[in-house]
Every structure is written in structure tokens, then in C-alpha cells.
Length: 412
Image (cartoon, rainbow, N blue to C red):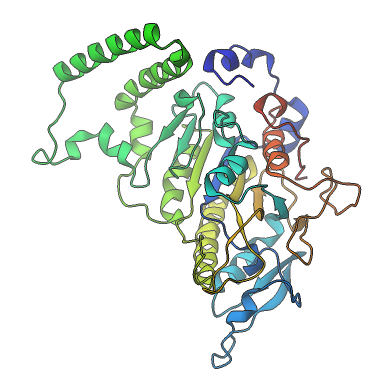
């Protein structure tokens, strides 16, 4: 597809939302949680029991520590690997929320490099100009949303749609910029109205010059101009300023309150968050124990808070990683990149307590029926494109125009 803002926005009126799907699923908000670096699903989501061809977490058991044992457990129909010593938060999460959670195993990424894997799971394809899930959802946001899409992760890919994505920064830097009185005058000079006027004049002249010199940039220039006009109104938006709390946001848990404040106040439709664990474990894959434990502790906080705020029934939550880890450990007791991974889906319209898809004895993806997620020799390998299409379908958005040339994987 020719990804220019003019070409796509010009056709938005002709791109229908799927009325029945939107009514059926009831999802009006989207939260995308991205785990950068490639997690190892065999530690929790894709249990490996008795497979000599796959090195699972049981290799790290310490017989001298009472209870340090890897066991296959089930909760509300979901199978997962349990170790109450190394990953207690996993057990806690599944005990509380397994009935709400849908696990997709055997997700075929088709890449073993981080940038391409990230692009596939977030945009459903390989076009570098294609928008990600959160951006597409924001294009169909209510006009009242001040920030249609908010990126707290730093990994968002808006393509040419810069005007709908706002990057807050993990430390909520935007909040500080909107309220400069909180910045030490000795460290940063305050910008006055005369300065703003000069900046505006410079911007406009530069924009006009680039329109003439670089016709190939016109789509991006239009998008940047729209984004700047929107941002200029934020300084006087009390609701928006009240939702932002400048401060350190080093973990997923720290991003949750700001994200849900924005959703609860009707300021955004889609939010992209990130885990901050060290998932890229070429050396010492044993670090994945702590990463999974920390992630499920934070993820549990996200789900608990969604429930407490009564937002879960209208919010779709998707958790993705760019890659998986190889079946066998390398000479450094690590695992290398692998093109098969797992994903999590939870929230509005999702029938939880289920696992869709699977991997074989070589950790390869197995074919499924997209409508049911059941294994089938006549099915297809579930790909990032199928998942991308399924998320949009659940939001009531026709996935066909958005570069995902695949049927949707259904979550109901």
C-alpha cells in the first residue's frame, strides 16, 4: 500500500468499522504491552515437559533449595510452568486471572532480527511505513480524545500518522514540558511568548521551503503540521495536564497509572506500554526467571487496576514480544533468537482460560484453524499478520486496508 497521510486519510471515510464485531466485542480502548528483546515462552506460557529436543527451565532447578521445582500446573483450563521459588508472581497471576487470559502459542514471527521482528508483531507486516496496532486504533478514535494514541514505550511505529501518536517518554517528560514552571530556571531557560512567535515563524518558513524542495516529504510534512497544531492546544487542557505525573517510570507498573488515567478520562483510545526486563538472553538465559516474575507482577497490577476502575470490559489488552528463544542453550548457557513466540490477549470480548496454537517437539509453529484456534493439519500457521488482523477485528475495525493481508485470528 502507498502509505501517505493524504492517501489513507482520504479513504478513511470509505473504510467501515465492522459494526457487528464492534458490538459483539465491546472493546473501545486498546493497550499494547511490548516485551522487547525476545522472551522465552517455555519458562511460563508454552510448557515443555519431557522434550529432550528442548532445554526448558527445569535445567535451572537447585536441589538444595526446597521447592525449587518446575511443574506443569493448570488454572481455569490454562497450562503453565510453575516454580513458586523463582517465579511466585506467575502462580499468583494465574490463580487470580487465568479465566480472563487467552494465550497464543506457536506465533510465527518469520524473523530472527529484532527490528524486523518488532515491525512484524506491531504492524502485521514488513512495510516500514505501515502504522502499528495502537496507531490504527487511534485513527478511529472519538474526536474528543485529546491524545488519540499515547506511546509510553518508545517503540511505537506511527508510520506517516505522527498526528495521532504522542510519545510521553517513560519519565513522563511531556508533563514537565507542558508545565515548565516546575523546571529549575537555573537549568533551563523559560520560553516566553516572543520566543514562541519566533519559533512559529521559523517553522512555517521551513515547512513551506521543504514543500517546494522535497515533494516526497509532503505527506510527512502534513502529518507533522497537524501534530504541532494539536500539541499547541495541550498547554491549556486541564484534563490532560491532570492526567500526567512527571517522574521515573522504569517498570511496566510505573506506566500503568498514567495510561489508565488517560483512558479513564476519555483522553486517549490506545496506549502502548513496554516491559523493561532484559529479555535478550544470549548469555545466561536463567535471567528469564526474574524477568517473567517481574513481568507477571506488573501485568497483574495492570489487570487489577483495570478491574478496579471498571475499564476491563471495554479495554482490549495485547502483550507481544519481537522474538522467541531457541530450543537449545548455547555454550554461554544462553538462548539465541528464534522466529516462533507467544502472545497474550485479555479484556473486552476475549474468551479466556484458553490456549490457542502450539509448538511441536522442535519448537516450531503448528497449523490452526483461525476461527477456533484449534490445531488442524488443514489450518495455517498463526502469524503476526493474523494476530494484527484479529486485534483490529476485535476493535470493530476492518483489517483489510491496513496492510495485514491475512484473515483475523478470532479471540471469542
